[in-house]
Length: 547
Image (tube, rainbow, N blue to C red; front, side):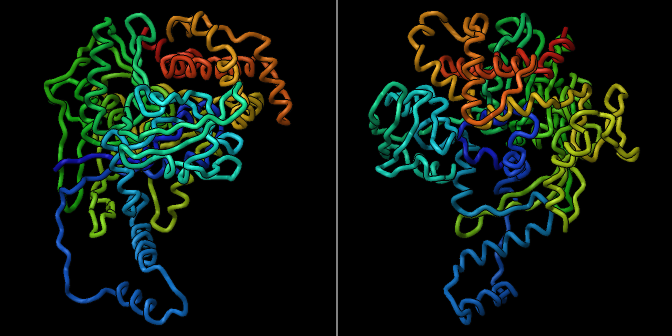
């Protein structure tokens, strides 16, 4: 039986997904993140076959017919049916769910490694679509779109200042391959709008944002999701690092909401010795299925040291990898307690190409742990608010506030104690930073002050910057954020009504994000994440452990 994971946050990949990397900013967009990350699903597609029965109508059919016949006003039969399905599934568990045909098509296209569109990452800032980055070799880059451009009109329709939603922007920019979309952009230094005709194409969605040698003999891989392309991407990235001589690896799964189980197994196969049990699943109808490491693998030797980073948004497939590494004592887990999702879904396509995802099993780590968080059927809202509760109860600041029942105690291969019943607890805890100064830097970030400043700075100095820095590595090493630049950012904040609260910590935050955004505009992710990692407490702790 072929299992794989699916996670709803990757249905919409055209907007910039940098928010998953802003996790060090306390309380920034918690509600928005919860709306996506907590929808994690593990399922099995097309492997359980069922036959529809034609005998008799159900109560739902009867009620629907009565409404259609006697209700005083026009109603949507499709909506009635969809709402009934959603209501039924909500009373099963938090992860059984329904997706209509459009949602199914979006999800499947992304999990297969791509979608069709124009190839831009964007943020909505001040109700205007700001291009954060363009896909290398994609339609927008070929047409001449640049980071920092503001898209104001699409096919003659104004999209700026009209409170348009991300989903509506996606509908306008995405479309079938070889179809054309006309956009008009505002560019720094240009008085008039610049028109572009862009022919849509297949846009690849990569699992790995960056893989690089973060220090001598030490590699770093940021894995954002587990999709059909993960196996090849991870194998290639790991091989390239090994060819450069790395003997230590930091695998960053923070903010990774999951994906295909096969992809999780393929990652484990590169890291864990042959014939080791990686994970198993069990359900009353499907029985038990074990997954073992195979003979392939580039990073399985004892002298090859491993650290895995997780946080409260690491879910499902991420927890399978982290759980296997921890239970088999293969490496060190650093960060905060993971999401805690250990249920398996099966995917059933309906007659109109919509689908239902029904929980059919639990999955277990090698020691026998089920890391699914408890839930009550009548209290799904409380289940989805769990991460907020973790903040409120102090768990994010102090590991001692986390309590596990003795009945959930398990042992790793070397006899260390680990616990089930609510995510993967890291071996080394990294508290989230709490500070009044953080509120100030958060306000500047949330209002786009730093991002807009970085875009404007590059627009004004692009020629000079390109001449001064030969590549991303050179930029990361040598580019300074000057005191003049700091004051300009602070002044922009004051103009936007944000009162200054400048401390030593604030200065580090402003310098870090300004340099990271400037670097991404110039050199892409290879200048973005290395700048952030220099100030990342979990990454610094990983480097210390690996030494």
